[in-house]
Amino acid sequence: MSALSAASAIASRELARFFTQRERFLAALVRPLVWLFIFAAGFRAALGLSIIPPYRTYISYETYILPGLCAMILLFSGMQSSLSLVHDRENGAMRLMLTAPLPRWFMLGAKLLAGALVGMVQVAAFLAIAALFGLRAPSTGYVTVVPALLLAAIMLGALGLLLSSRIRQLENFAGIMNFVIFPMFFCSSALYPIWKMQESSPLLARLCEINPFTQAVELIRFALYGQLNPAALGWTALASLVFFAVAIWGYEPARTRS
Image (cartoon, rainbow, N blue to C red; front, side, top):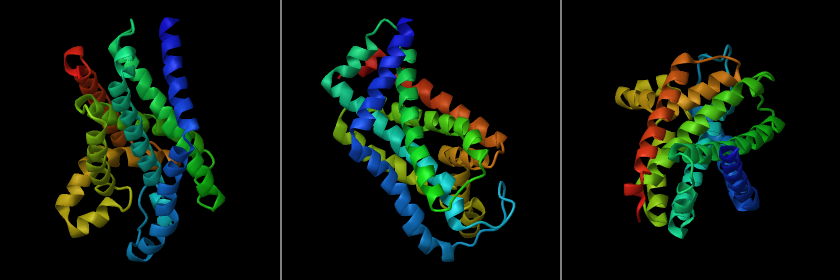
């Protein structure tokens, strides 16, 4: 009961913090919507798309980047959640949470799940707006994509958790955040198919393939169409475990002293 109460308190605090920060919610939606309705208009003519799984016909560029933008929301949300951890460490709230009579992995896991839920709320709002403008996945896809979104959010949140375990100051984390976010996003299949990258640079195509963010994007892409991508599922789950394990190690008492 004490564990459930602690997890519930952490989740409630994270959700309350998110919903009271309206600017954060709007920023989370504006960024992918700009990509969807402005940048996509320019890329549409430059990037021809062939029929690739899970699609069974030719699709618009907006349809292609929709899963990538969902993953982008989760990436920014995970980093934002971890940014709050650095802030909590500076004001002492983090130390208080980690001294609770519960396993360290449980407290960090509860924080991670709470952040994942916040990211999924943002994705749901984004998909609803996209549907209003005619960009819809199959109706069953909105159900099958939920586990994929949760796992992707956990993986990206665990990455942010790992970074927050190594960074002591809020200002430094903001800079590192950009250093991680943009290479992961642009060197992935979020904006263009890997086969397209292969035509210009086999090395960059290979980097896209091994990028964990690419696996999260493909997991969401297939799930939106009611399909399972076993390779993406396996690599995303493995990356989640590795990132979370290293984060727990980084938050050991000897390493969390300011």
